[in-house]
Image (cartoon, rainbow, N blue to C red):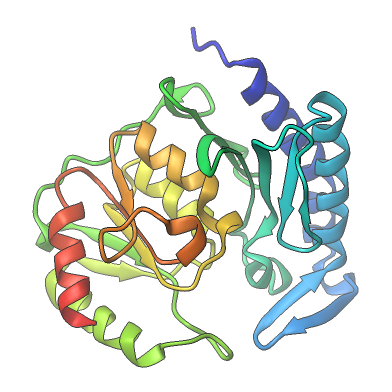
Length: 264
């Protein structure tokens, strides 16, 4: 029997409560009030409602912890160490177009390091979760990264720069290299779920440039606890600040990193 810690129980309960409104809104997606947030990027009433519920639920049980939100920014931690890093709706563009691929992502980051994470896909009712030293799971099933050893057998995921995002030329060089070396490249539109899928062995790797801390914080601990590796594309370890990330199984992290660097 899998025993979840109090921290994971708190995170999972908050995600499930917040997801109820997402499911309702997704069923009426054409009725949502949507405003432009920036080029090619949107924020909906759904994001803001989910964020409010998550803040209320997590603050109630961990009042000294701070927050880093996609929509409303940072709230300082009273204890100076612990922060909830939250994307209330990762895959907003998918959501607003009626594409059923999005998630709620919550990470607990202590002194700059993710130590617990939950990524919840409400439509499939998949709760991906992990805690440092305790393993990585989806619902009650233990996760392990895939065992594939060759890039030619690997399926990799990425995020394609859209209007307003930097370095499209660099990305196209990386994409060409990955296309030539792997069994396939996928672009699903939710960074947190891409990383959850690496942890689950559904794909071998994920890379992207220019992501935010709330996109990847929970995924970092999920992949690591499933036996994979996460770094910056150049091999550094400041992903939450740089926004450049490569997550892969233990066999392909180094060769894929080398391939992407050579293409840059």
